[in-house]
Length: 189
Image (cartoon, rainbow, N blue to C red; front, side):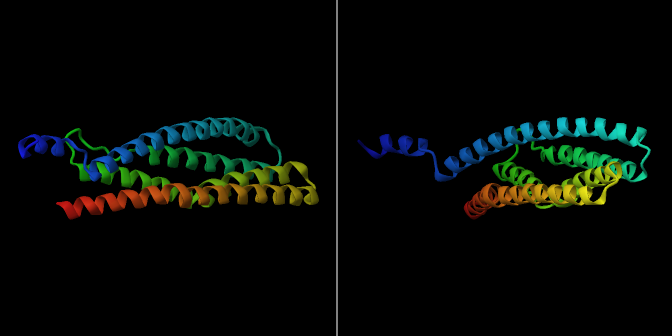
């Protein structure tokens, strides 16, 4: 075998960068699919919560229950807006460079990390806080309301922990791989 025969074989071999890009694309497709189903579940649950708490807001005689229902409805609107806003992809044209494609993936990942990091403020406090106020308004018994509030807070702490764990264990490693790939791409340029 001479060099003329070996050169095309060598050029046809995928580079390390090509293999990493394929992995990034596969992770991106998998992540988009997971996000789609997560968001669909959340938006359907939000619609049910809006129906239930909307009825409470309209028909409840108790002021505390109505305030709690309103608080929860504001939380639902915030959840709906943030989930849909975070799904917006950084659009890249078909002829975009590899760097632009990687930057779009990195931007999308950063949006999801931020959502999970801040889940306490945009999701848990408005929704669970409103539910606690509605229960307290309807029960009229502060002892049971306190027990309910503690149970809801324990549940909320668990949900918060799951979200913090998810961005640290799943999304940050993906982000680091993307950043390393971008650095290698810049170094090769």
